[in-house]
Length: 181
View 1 (cartoon, helix red, strand yellow):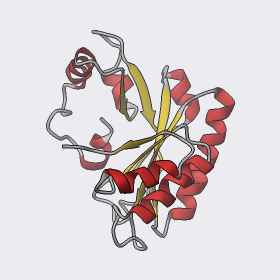
View 2 (cartoon, helix red, strand yellow; view 1 turned 90 degrees about the vertical axis):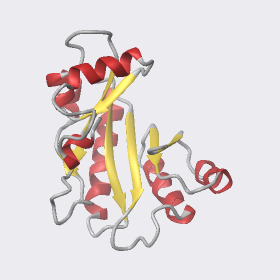
View 3 (spheres, helix red, strand yellow; view 1 turned 30 degrees about the horizontal axis):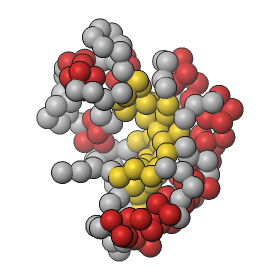
């Protein structure tokens, strides 16, 4: 449920976030992932309890540098809000690659200090990437996250099980696939 920051209100996550979180919980999910608006306006206010993964980075689709994700929250706020984990979105292959890697490294260190699980959303996107689903660039993206201490890595599907198995084999942390039909 982190898409609202990047693209604004979309079907399903408009004004009634609380209703949507309840539907997600009743559907069997064990956590929701979103920005600070989720715990402030929708999470654990009523209905079934469900885990919270607080997303710490973002940008908007209106930005001329929409692939450059900056910190919009911090680990201490996540702890205060009762988050069960945090996440970051990092794009590898942009001009802002060094700054985003620095963010990942700093947040990863803080997570280890507090015992907070870190989900790193790692996408090969930007000026230096021709195909963000190419197994070679996806392998680099997920390995970077593991090398910097992510507990779980989310990334692009490479198109088939054989190529994606190469991605998983090259990463010490568990890997999950972004999106889906």
